[in-house]
Image (cartoon, rainbow, N blue to C red; front, side, top):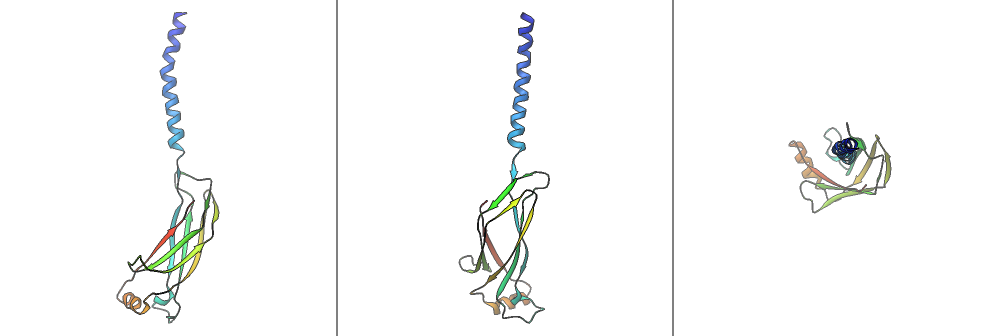
Length: 148
């Protein structure tokens, strides 16, 4: 009887160790990665040097929503609430020159979704922007507010 009691005490530390490992891998091994958003294309016709269309004051862009993480887990299904995209000219984040709202949508695991949008701009100093482009560069900034 003493031997069987002593033998079961020897298994308790091994059981606790294995249980700890299982809990660790369950908690940290199933961490899901957030979706990744990126602007894939950004086109301003009024600043296109090869075009004569200087009156078109819209901005076109394509946002990529990637619900996969190479080598990791992703959420099985993601629902994006309404997205608000605001465009600013140069470094002045106090005065937006345009915005657009993208309706919410669902995205499955391992899926990539694109949303192409057009923004009508207001208040962009197009002549100075064209001059900056002729000298090599100009800058637009965007903010994207989204919840999933």
